[in-house]
Image (cartoon, rainbow, N blue to C red; front, side):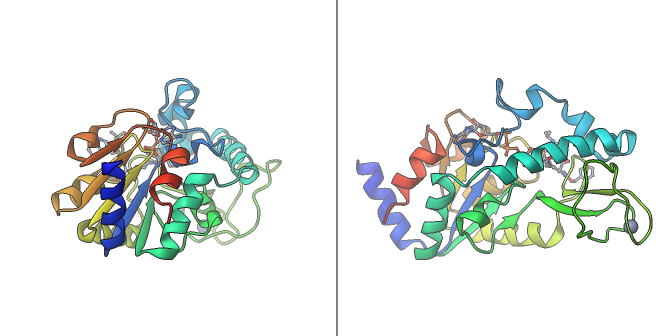
Length: 240
Ligand code: BJW
Ligand code: ZN
């Protein structure tokens, strides 16, 4: 109770709040996480077979089938109470949402200015010339081709070994180093450079809050570790 009151007071006084999210924030919407032992995507598929440029060049149809399946799944789900609580906090307070998620659920819940570190699964661009493609990708004509250069089209996400979008990374880096409160929600904290943001915010003096049912490497740096589901904890934490 004391901790909850203390947190509410900090939230009221905070001038720069960052909410940094990972796959766990969308788990309660029905989007599989990556690394959860039973339900995570990597328990059924190997990351290196699907989420690297080499994997794509080796078998673009296989990779596209995986993304087409996930696009369909994500289009059919709804934001959950965690997304809505974050959007609601953003209407009352100076919040920057930084997400590793590619599902667009924060935006659908009403958050503005969301920084997408790993792209968006619904974007498509050319692997060769980089131009965006706006036509829907048909599952019957895989792999899709670029109308400009004939190269292969790819999903607009960041794979292992690729750099993060420069502008998004700059904004995230700036927000983390100037935050006075930093909420780290539903991420295993093992994928870099994203995983460095909470550590960087903590080192710069932010009050670091960790929300996750499981332990994570960033727990040691956190002032407050809340073990539980984002969809249950955030609506309580961010209630007006
Ligand atoms: C709940 C919950 C509930 C469940 N409520 N919580 C050593 C040092 C630094 C870097 C490296 C290194 N070795 C290798 C690297 C590079 C690599 C990396 O970090 N690898 C590590 C795995 C070791 N990083 C990169 O390659 C990045 N680029 C880069 O470094 O560029 C520089 C460079 C250039 C050239 C060569 C080398 C370097 C790019 C990383 C791109 C990540 N891409 C993915 C796929 C996106 C596309 C797609 O969706 O298909 O991004 S991988 C995947 O992991 C996805 C996620 O955004 C990301 C993070 O996962 P996240 O969100 O944390 O999910 P999970 O599943 O891991 O965790 C879920 C959590 O939720 C768990 O903790 C649960 O407990 C919790 N949870 N239910 C709250 N209800
Ligand atoms: Zn092209």
